[in-house]
Amino acid sequence: MTALILDGKKIANELMARLHKEIDSLIESGARPGLAVVLVGEDPASQVYVRNKEKACADLGIHSVVHRLDSDTSQDKLIDLIRALNESSEIHGILVQKPLPGHIDDKAVIGAISAEKDVDGFHPISVGNLLIGDEGFVPCTPAGVIEMMRSAGISVDGKRVAVIGRSNIVGKPMAALLIRENATVTVCHSKTANLQEVTREADVIVAAIGRPNFVTPEYVKPGAVVIDVGVNRLPDGKLAGDVDFEAVKEIASAITPVPGGVGRMTIAMLMKNTVEAARKTLESSR
Ligand SMILES: Nc1nc2c(c(=O)[nH]1)N[C@@H](CN(C=O)c1ccc(C(=O)N[C@@H](CCC(=O)O)C(=O)O)cc1)CN2
Ligand SMILES: [Mg+2]
Image 1 (cartoon, rainbow, N blue to C red):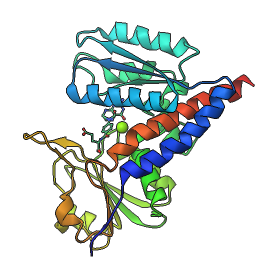
Image 2: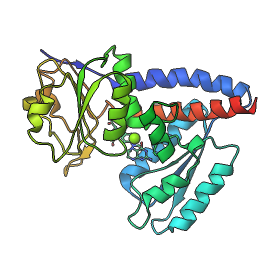
Image 3: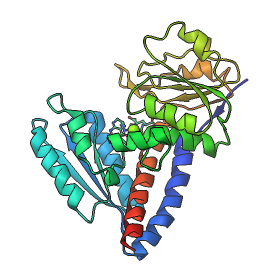
Image 4: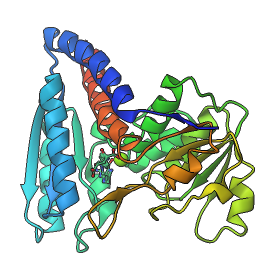
């Protein structure tokens, strides 16, 4: 068997085209969506992601402002900026690019963002809403995984899904979203005993461990769907996922590549959340 390759670029572009139309009509109603991105420091990968977010906004007609702050910016100054953005009527979404420098407490900063503008879905109120099944913003990468599977006609209803990784950005919200889709979810991590035995039971594997080429065919039940959330930069500068793509594609029924898979969905989902934030503001003003 050679797996169906799930094309994140194509699915993300289709979503962007749909959003473009929605944004045009929001602009006609006088509610141009606005996104503020805050970048602290000079992390090279973060700089690329922030530029890509700026470009996506420009392509869609979303108003965007990027605040680039020095790496030694104090936490108080950062929180003051967030409070000002919370008050701005032109800004519907606020995100603080991760990782933040070590002297800054992530929790204090994310907690300062108004939950109504939390387009990253990292605020405790957003996390709580996701867990109890209420409406709210969902983190972009796991939301992108769900969107990709939906677009490819892959249902997880009643299926066994193994999520490898328990981060707040991917593993935990991924599990909550999968439960919402009626999957039977097992969250695995570095302390999981007999990991291969667990993942070999799964109809779908979501790999979000941050270790290049970790998932080999021994971890995969033949015919399973394999979703790779890993973005690992190798010493030679090349990018590798958490899945050994070349080997696993021979036994999986569907698989996402890196690059060009889940990563491509992240920014598209951010645009979707920003549009939703603007639409909610428009509706509440009526
Ligand atoms: N505030 C946030 N910080 C971070 C997030 C986030 O969602 N919000 N996620 C990641 C970084 N990220 C966006 O910010 C991101 C990561 C990867 C990609 C992507 O397009 N990946 C490509 C490869 C890109 C490359 O060549 O490096 C792919 O997989 O095809 C987009 C966005 C951590 N921080
Ligand atoms: Mg993300």
